[in-house]
Length: 130
Image (cartoon, rainbow, N blue to C red):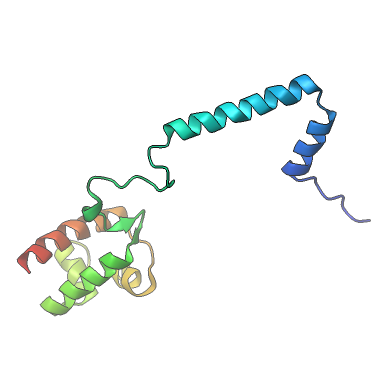
């Protein structure tokens, strides 16, 4: 015996639409039109892009993942100072045996937020040294 497939939300909506009366249909259309007007007036950017924060230059990660540009910046500082990822972790105040930075640089793995915060400060200080 096969299981009966559950109807999708779209099919449920279509079924409800066909069984609704003209007043209910008009009320639904008015509600959707009001939602669209509210979204259009609330959207500051017509392109639909996310607003860029004031400190966009200071962003080094998206959540717990380093941005590709950050990885390049960290690797450039590491090459200039002849450091390994474990050496950077030691400078950040974490255990040099912690391989999380190595994984983040090589495999784009997640980092702890405390490491990201410390890395942001470290990167700013060492890029300023030039």
